Length: 131
Image 1 (spheres, rainbow, N blue to C red):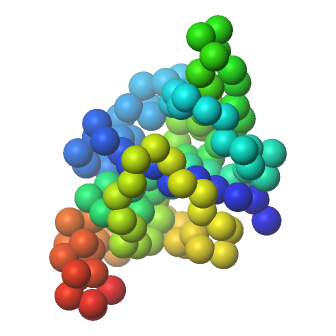
Image 2 (image 1 turned 45 degrees about the vertical axis):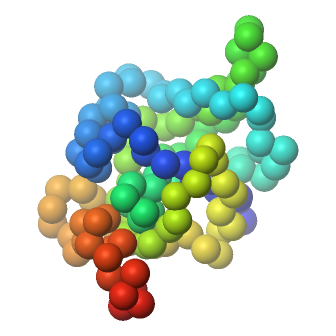
């Protein structure tokens, strides 16, 4: 069972804009972090789960990690956004680990043909204890 990570999608306001950013990278997308995750070896086959408006909304498979010339680390991602069941998640800085048993299930796609609730609505329902 691979280990996963979560990260806030801080520049993308919608899943469509996040999808557009990912798809703008032909072979792989890159994120930069100051430190390599200590548990990076456990993330083989894992994914980065995106948080938007206090909810997990999608995931991108992790391809690996590479150190840059300036000492920082690059997280290499498959440039796909796989829709997941919208799940409440508190905001945090940087990234956090996510165990395989805690990941939400994948959905069909981001084309509006599935039962994905908008992240803002999920956040409001979570505050009321309904999700």
